[in-house]
Length: 318
Image (tube, rainbow, N blue to C red; front, side, top):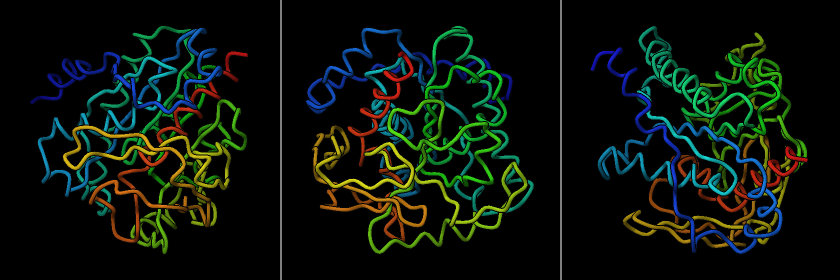
């Protein structure tokens, strides 16, 4: 397909994703705070999914995988916003392993699609509605680039940015966004990011490629400056016991459905990573080397993310 043809069809799937959460949302997420949020102006959330692991590629069709990830990630914002999830031509996994012109071109092409989707998103939601930006993995990388490139359009409108499953440096990356890390649970216009690991955690596969690279500020990135916002507490470098987690999505064996179980998994930030505490649930066979729970960064904390978005939205509307 030619690039011009892609541009014409890119936004076919950008209409609001309406995912029925009835029977899945924990009771705690139906509290008065959410009711207040629903009674106010509806937000618009743009969610950029990430690349799919090779194991998942072997499991099912591309459409099945796409739907699976959009449902498990974007649905966390469904109670507070119209959710928009564009398709885009994602860079293959190899683009993150190679430092070559072809790798850079693949990432630039993917970002160009996301940038056009953002333009269309802004046109469709209008000039006044507050915005949540959320992404995962490659999607979080593109969210980070949007935050730097589109500061003017986002100024005064961004409730929060969820750049999850991609390492961000507090010193090397965030100043280019003009946004601080989320240091309190009701803070707005801030950035959340986390990477989920079981114990013992070994992030070498990520850190070896990321540490030492330069952010948009020109500063070298380092693990010591890695941003970790605990999604359960909503705070930078936070810690929370399992009972504070409002719900983990536990998928069925065939990934056709999931149940939401509260209070089974806690987490704490340690050396920039989100370390899992408590009973690790049977989320599926896709845990990556190093006890990296990357494919499940949202699902492990689905109820907490839903609550976090509601809390920040309510703070925005005050």
